[in-house]
Image (cartoon, rainbow, N blue to C red; front, side, top):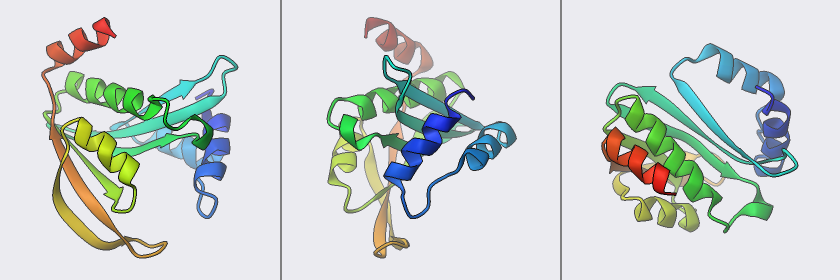
Length: 153
């Protein structure tokens, strides 16, 4: 909860046409028990990135992975995705689903590196520019295997 001002500030940079406000973040975190958000902060406590997960039984959905543009290319997206995988596995999820803009090649490459495969295309899904959404899916490792990998990191 203490990261909400930083999350809202980063939203202004990442989504200037439709950013989430502090009130939206409060509502998202307080009113949705299936949601799980992870935040990466720098040494100065500034929010560098965040990721959200919706946990619904054996399937979990990646809601968002967002990294400060000044911090992109430093592996933060991978760290966030790994955290989501761990959290989902520990809560009983066996697969992960996500949607990604078809023109976001860096994100697609990240997801493919983590075993995600395209299962569907939603034509014109993203309103800004009528960009297609690729629906991708990955099978998760068992919670025990994920926990051991995290300890090694």
